[in-house]
Amino acid sequence: MNIDLIFRIAAIGILVAVLNSLLSKSGRDEQAMMTTLAGLVVVLLMVVREIANLFDTVKKLFNF
Amino acid sequence: MDLIRIGVMGIISAVLIVLIKNQKPEIGLQISLVFGAVVMVTLAGRIKTILDLISLYFNRADMSGAYITSLFKIIGMAYITEFAAESCRDASQGSIAAKVELAGKVMIMITAIPIITSVMSVIVNML
Image (tube, rainbow over all chains, first blue to last red; front, side):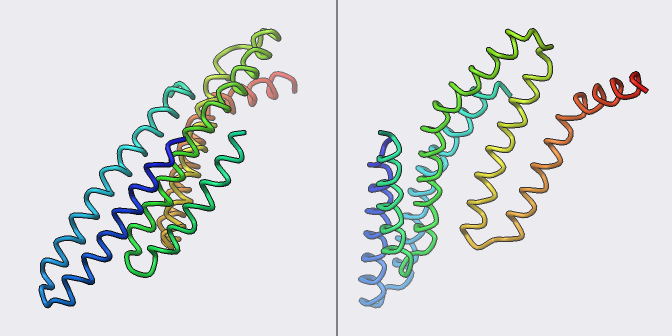
């Protein structure tokens, strides 16, 4: 029951949101876009690893 | 005990998702995906015990083993299809969820073909 994964993703989301509004306020919109994409990629990697773990468990469990 | 932990995690994830939803909707969706995956993995252990119980009774009644494995496979497929379809519906993509469910049904039907043919042959022999 690793709940820290959820907290990590939420922290990244909040960080990206704050950075995004900060950068867009200071006029640098393209860097704001870059930080959004970077945050999204990092979170996506974590999510994909967790879902791959789920599918492996199901495959092993139901002897696919 | 695990139920309490899952419930608390669900509430925390829901609050975090609402918090992040209005700025970054895509990361909110991914929090619900990760929560779904984590809960399904922990539940898999519990389902394992149920499946062992079922196969134990099947062996004791010495029924033929071929049907048990396809039965378990069908349960696994339903498990994965439900997870994927609900995640897509959570991202308000109803049509994708429907397609995933259709694919799941087709695959389950394919796996169930030997069982259906054996049932048909038994019925035909009876008549």
